[in-house]
Length: 94
Image (tube, rainbow, N blue to C red; front, side, top):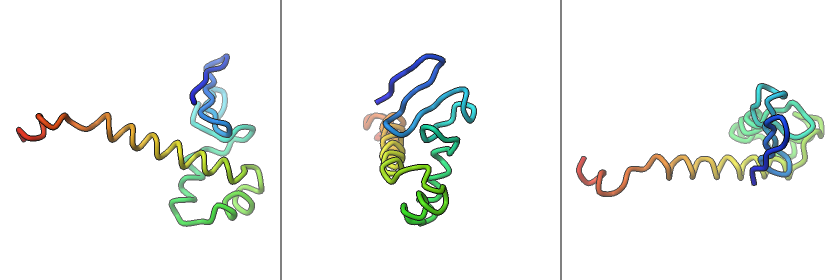
């Protein structure tokens, strides 16, 4: 669900945006300067989503925003994996 807006802003989802005017264009949660990678690091470290939303970030991002970030990260991983795979014919020759 990538939609471009004026000025190079890209809406990556309902809660996530990449805007060259905010945090050097890194994906952030809308209306904040909280970068998506920061929240994904919290998830990877095993922190609860409730803790991340309410304690770590003071209620500035909803639970649905974390779910969207995880989903987008999963899609990016799958896309990267699929685009980097060599055709089976090439693999058989190695």
